Length: 173
Image (cartoon, rainbow, N blue to C red; front, side, top):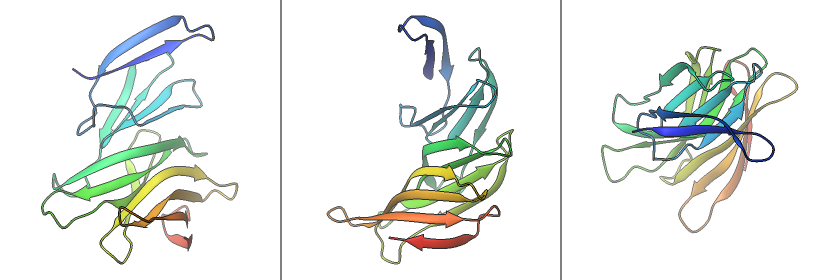
């Protein structure tokens, strides 16, 4: 079985319920959900993004694998961009050895979920780097918020700005 999506009105009454959305390596919970410009929804969990229409019917589904099955991706936020595509942030964790910690990932897709570019960013020490939120700025570029160099006890807030091609323009921690 997969995850269910339920649309309710302002009083909490069910309008429709759609189910069995399969989220690849999803962790059993949807971690990103946004309304899209066509009044549909974009859903994210694990390494999968699903676009549904305003009736909750699946339009497309894309699964992203940054390491040919040797990793676990977790999409934490996704937003529609001005070109109709999507920007997502989360983290990537290799699963091939024990000395591997999560690294921040950023993913830009077109309107059909096809990858335009992606980035994996890691601090210099072998600590956790988490992407938590993604936005498109007024100048058309992207800012990713998260935590950087998290050793389990201490972490630093991180803001990273990328241009429309996915190149890092600045980073503040």
